[in-house]
Image (cartoon, rainbow, N blue to C red; front, side):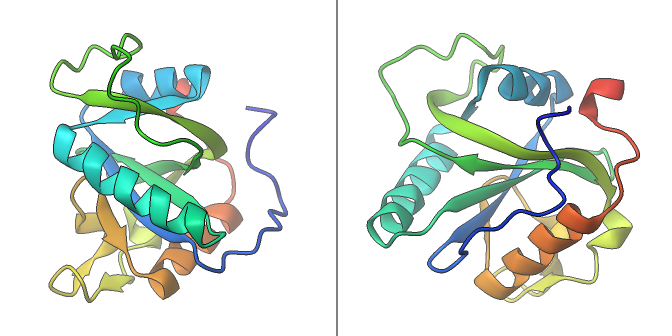
Length: 163
């Protein structure tokens, strides 16, 4: 955990995109942190791959906000660092429905309760709170910055490895 959770994360967010990642398996998140990889459903992977290629062409970054289903919290932020590779078998996860894998670089690994983020509503998702997002839901730019800053500034009180 010492390599994560920088107090200052200086980055130019211009042309960046933000997505929520939902998963039912906290162990998958722990494996992602250990292996610097993630995978998604075919549809989710295609959505993320398209966005990754767009932001890369425009000098931006693609950030992923992880929230395990039913956990009542977000547990970290990673940056997608490669396109989706559909040829390599996804061996680091037991989720057989997931197709293709891509590299991620974890920035924040800490638990942030949903009540810290619930006030952020998404106009591209029927004005629902960001905490009610589905897997690979894109977060509009302004709201994505808000989520990033809240997770960044929230004190470290535990993480997915503590469970």
